[in-house]
Length: 469
Image (cartoon, rainbow, N blue to C red; front, side, top):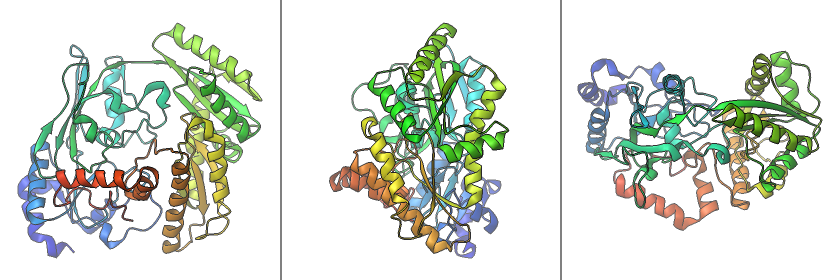
């Protein structure tokens, strides 16, 4: 394939420098992959990986791509869980890792970061000013802030406690698909009222433009207090989450959950005694020690009023580290065990239990692979149900693909049934059918018209809005 594009590669080198264009086959295959557990196909492999240094170079690449009618795919770190990171057609792939500077302006009340800055780099820089980043992805060692804002994911954090990262964005530098550079928002700490284009690109997943720089309000660091709770059944956990909202208990920053299978494996992996039943990991937050202590006490009283085996504040940081790590250890175990099709169901709180058991029922109804294993763990307090269906590694690739498609479609049917949403992973690429199911053809066509207006040659992230696999 490279020979066909030799002239294109040379032209790209003229724009960003020879050393910033990668085109060997092994590297291109790496950039064609993401966490989706089925094989890379020929159409996923990019023509070349281009690493621009700034918005001006991104602009030149996009103008060139429009002139040559070559698609361009934007990739952060490739950690997206629903196929956004994987190119859908042979394309120039933009890797923004060189745009990663971070500047804090304490006297102005905000910071700015290049889209390629890693989440942990931003968090560490902000910590020097006793400030925080309002998002907690599990992949923060490699995930980028550009990807975070493009998906508008708060990850582990409960939206009702902290909001979305986009709520704190003051402005963006964006390169439109046709190459124009756009600056949105304000340098004031008060965001604009009325029509304002920043909102179009937050959560836009690279459909409408390439975010190259982000300005966000500075948020003072929070103080946390951790609680662990053990429940006999999943029902007890679901009832607790529903009661938390119904009784207007102050929501925690984190409310993670492991069902009995996940808890047993996860606790064993970190060297903790086998838990009885399900486990909830809860973190309260505030900006003062007195405030967080009061919130933790109130939440503990609430838990003890529910059908809980035990609930307590975890005083030992090492113990909490193990409890928290048990979640990721089970995730590692699950992915070693077989091909895993994960879902994200984010129903209204009062329908949480109904939606959960709809997800359980899918296990017995999947046609592409009979009787997969089932487990659930994740951000139940958001509330989000992460339902996972697992089949053996040796399953043929085509069956894997059909299996994942079926799980995606069936779980998105649940979201549509309860007027729910994708609260964490985004809604395009593999979720285009969900948009139609949930919001209808008129809504979907509006998105297509916006895309057409900004990207008349359908250059940028081609296939994501169409829902290509």
